[in-house]
Image 1 (cartoon, rainbow, N blue to C red):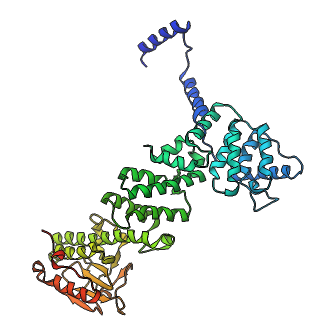
Image 2: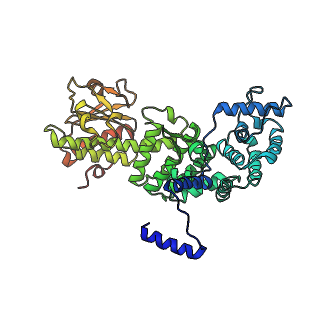
Length: 482
């Protein structure tokens, strides 16, 4: 505000209230601003130390069981008591205080006469944070919170009441309401969680974990109906993580994470999504669950149907990467295969027909040096092709499973070789290291790529595949469209 505007404002204010406003220093204004924010907005809480919670839990147990009255009922102890409900006293290990018959009812009488606003807020926070920890007693605690929130009156408590009412936090359907509120908002996950007063220590709350489960179900429905944009999908996926200054991790259990993977994949069991949606989902799943072809440990609880969707996408990506590699090499290496467009059209036709169920690439070290510039998948994920015995550093190999057959194609002019799946020397998929001999020895069939423009080698190879597998493909479908 300029000096002129300040002067005009002071004159106007003096006319209205008969006095000039007090002159406040910048430091006082800053302090007042912080104080008001704390009054109105600071409903978040830093989690108490476990040793402090344990000490109060032990005192509550002693008081409740008729021992010496060592619980002072001081404000800090009362605030900690809300968290102590989910601790086990040393005198009764293995059982939360809240699970002790009659204790919660006794605790309510203590709360009603001694609780103040901050203790009530702590009780609500403890309910939200420990949501799902003791389901059989959760309903009683929810009812206690609903009563307690009416006991006090302060700006902080009014702020908490507003959030409770707006998002139905203390109602049985609270997590569902909260998930729908987030889905229909435009805020980022971090902004939304901050707005509902569950940032800082509450960011890992069980209530948010339950909300994330509901968001996952909603995401599955919206993906099925093709209602999500790439930006919106990225936003809802971010809700599934707790993001601290130190690290970012899933807020859900391993079982819940498997459910999320299914929610993201099953909508596409029959039809693929738009390329940008597929790209985001594929990268997200590989980043957090790993490649199921290489390590199944994180995929054991995910259904085969859901895994098949991701594997289909990965097969397509691998095939595209190999022929993108051939395209790149044909520009720089004189002896690179110039027929890449014919081979690409041939195998892409089998892919579209759903006949290619596995695909893997092994690449030489020279290829790996610049592969990340043009491959969709990181070259680190692919196998290494060891140089020697005819294999060069600029070679790459594609391994395919077509029905009951295993096919090996080379990046440079070389024969296509095919093994029966039960052949003793059949090449293996998804290995980290390959040598040339294991990719050329003992094949059942070999095909030279000759007269590609007339469909000569394509017809011969398609006839062999038909004889061995019963898969029938018309020659026209195996040729490039241009």
